[in-house]
Amino acid sequence: FGDEKDRVLIKSDGQFTYLAADIAYHHHKFSREGVEGTPQYNRIVNIWGADHHGYIPRMRGAIEALGHPVNEFEILLGQLVNLIVDGEKARMGKRRKMLTLADVVEEVGVDATRFWMVNKSADTTLDFDVNLAASATDENPVYYVQYAHARCAGILRNATQDNVNVATGEKAPALLTEEALKAYEQNLTADHLSAMLDNLDSDEARQRVKDLILKLDQFEDLVVDAANLRAPHLLARYALELSADFHGLYNVCRILTPDADVTLGRLMVIIALKKILAQTLYLLGVSAPDRM
Image (cartoon, rainbow, N blue to C red; front, side, top):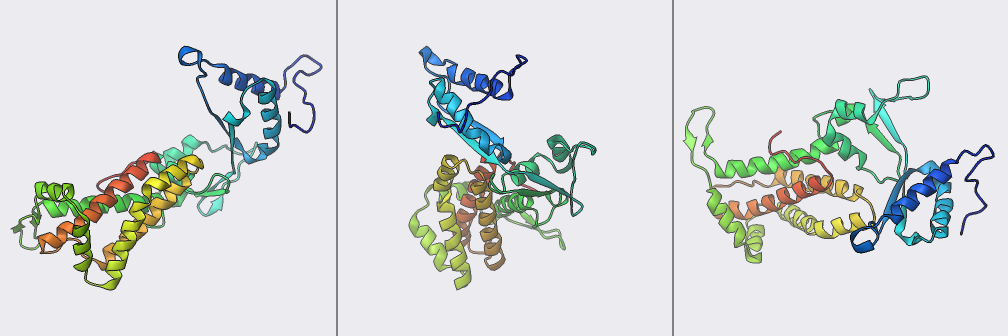
């Protein structure tokens, strides 16, 4: 059945080998019945370490020998994760304290752990910098993306809430009402976006808006690719690129202007960006804070 040699399932002392237990496990999975006698599962995915690559043919052979559909059996191989603590790789062995995933989560939090773990392809060795993952700097990828979302939320708050002059204490009325913003969004057309591009101050700002809109338009296709390829790192990379495009635009383009019509058009991009960032982070199991 495709394996390079026969395999031992029961040793001379009557004990089962690891392979025997693994075969029983997969046979049980494939044999489970769902509704009206149909199989409960139509795909079984295993995540193994890269050093188990040679184990794949024997498991496929066993599944086929038992009469199960081998095309419904999938293996994902993951490389090692190196923990970097204080700039040095943490050495772990039988004589040293073992650092668990729970230790890492306690140190840097759930969001940072999840984002860092999927920040690179599973078939690439990951250097997990514990100190950087716990930091509030632009060099920390999860902070960089979450800050982009929080900045979008802050822009929308400033557009629809009264502003206070810190020096004088005087209140300035909000540029827009939430109702006006929502109504504009619901009736948005391509002409509105075209007018927004015409009202930008420079060619650089115009190009950055175009790049950001094109990047937002890639989202749905990217989600499909990430699912089909079992590649969540594509979403993490996308979130980082999207955040970089936004931060670049923010530095060259004023979003909130005295002109309500101009401001409304620019806020449409911010609303779309905030939604896509939140959805991307949600798919990665990471929170999207409105304030940081």
